[in-house]
Amino acid sequence: MKAKLGIFISGRGSNMLAILEACRSGALADCAVVEFVFSNKCEAAGLRKAEALGVSTFCIDNEGLKRKSHEKKLLEVLERKDFDLIILAGYMRVISADFVRLFPKKIINIHPADTKVHQGLGAYDWAWKERLIETKLTVHFVEEGLDTGEIIHQEIVNLQGADSLEEVERRGLAVEHVFYSEAIKKVINGKEFKALSGK
Ligand code: GAR
Image 1 (cartoon, rainbow, N blue to C red):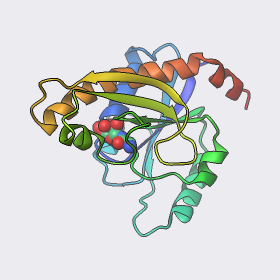
Image 2: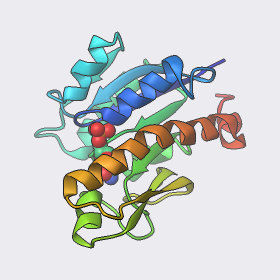
Image 3: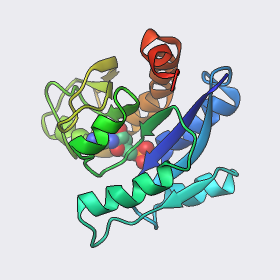
């Protein structure tokens, strides 16, 4: 039985595409399948890319909606979906504690910095401004609180000699695209996932 992934995005969706590719013919091919892609931004480029690859998508734009009503609408759709894990891949909307409590250890996020040092938006910007010689990408379970939660895996990106923000981001994303799928695989194969799958 393969784990069913629901991927949440807000923008271009390069991590989503890497995970989709990993499910179809890469690191996740034997253990996971992308069930749907959701976005809180209906104009997200990632949605169009997922559709073009034959993936089921839906969006509920959060524009003008309070967090509670947006999540209520989202939960109404999720109730009709079959999934084992929610994968946040550049999902730029804070998830409420109430929502998180409904899916304990079922929501995973990637943050392009060490979550013990940096949380929130602009992690590559921060790494560039601080002239870091390396940054530590983090995949973690989503718990209540912004970019906190049990760390699943961290990976160092070498930033030595990077001479622009674009270069910092390019190096970071290249690592994200490989290591997020590996971290998801670790969760699927680990005891955390086995404990959840008896739903
Ligand atoms: C990625 O760098 C991801 O790590 C980051 O947003 C980018 C989304 O790119 N996420 C966060 O900053 C979460 N706090 P993508 O849409 O091309 O995957």
